[in-house]
Structures are given as structure tokens and as C-alpha cells.
Length: 83
Image 1 (cartoon, helix red, strand yellow):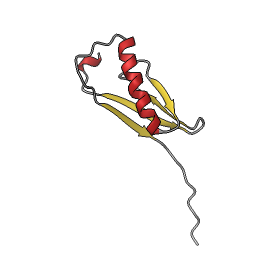
Image 2: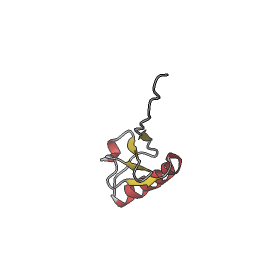
Image 3: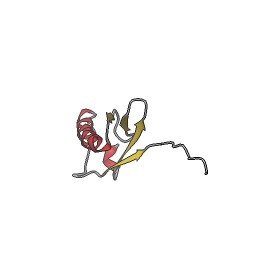
């Protein structure tokens, strides 16, 4: 139950095929969001968390909940050959 939590962890991963950041959270059932940038993803996630807390009828005793958005992206590069 979320009421006993100190914070919400949201994982954001880059989907190179779709060219979007995809966010999800084990702490908030139903949270899945995507956006082409982290800057646009953040407010979208916060609104969705608020809506899902209400829709899931989660009992919240806190007036403020820290939300940690942890982003992960894997990139690859070609290493230039030595001259």
C-alpha cells in the first residue's frame, strides 16, 4: 500500500526503436507513459500518478510524496581506429 511508502520510484528507459522515453513504476499500478524527451515525460508522469492514485483508490496519508524518476539509456559508439 502506498500510504506506508516514503517515495515513488519511476523507471524511465529509452526505446531507440520508437524514439521515446518509456516510464513505469512498480509503486503505482497502471503507470505507463512515453514521451520523446525526459523534460516532457516528467509532468506527464506526475499527472498520471495523481490520477492513478485516485482511480486505484489508494489510501494516502501523506500531503507530499517524493517522486524519483530514474532514467536509463544505453548508447553505443564506434571507436576510431588508431592512426
